[in-house]
Length: 139
Image 1 (cartoon, one colour):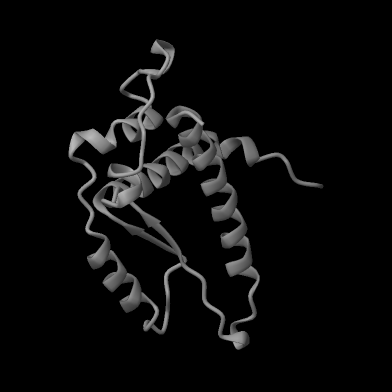
Image 2 (cartoon, one colour):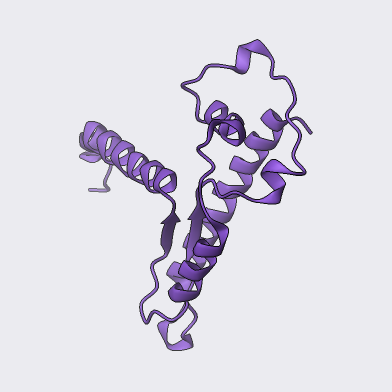
C-alpha cells in the first residue's frame, strides 16, 4: 500500500474509532466505573517510521503542501517526528491513575494544534449556520 493510501485509510480508521469510542464513553453507566480515553498521539519516533518504513513517490496531483495528508507524508524526513515514546508511555501511565480521565488526550504539540483547529472550525461553522435551526421544530 502506498503511503498516500495508507494515510487516507489511517484517517478513516481513526475517525471511525474515535466516534465509536465517544459514543461508548457517553453511554457507560458511571456506576460501572469504566473509563475511556482517546489518546491522540502526535509524531513519535518509532522503528516503524525510520527503520522499517518505505517512502514511495506520490503522484504530483497529491503534493499540495497545504494538505494535512501531505504534511504527514513528509514527517519522517522533516524533523517533526520528535516525540519520545518512553516519555509518552510515562504520561499514559500517569493518566490511568487519574480519578476523572479526559475523553480526549492529545499527546504532542501537533495533536494539540489539530484538536484546537477542529474545535475552532466546528464553532465557526455552528455560529455561521445556527439560524438554520430556528424554524425546524414541530408546532
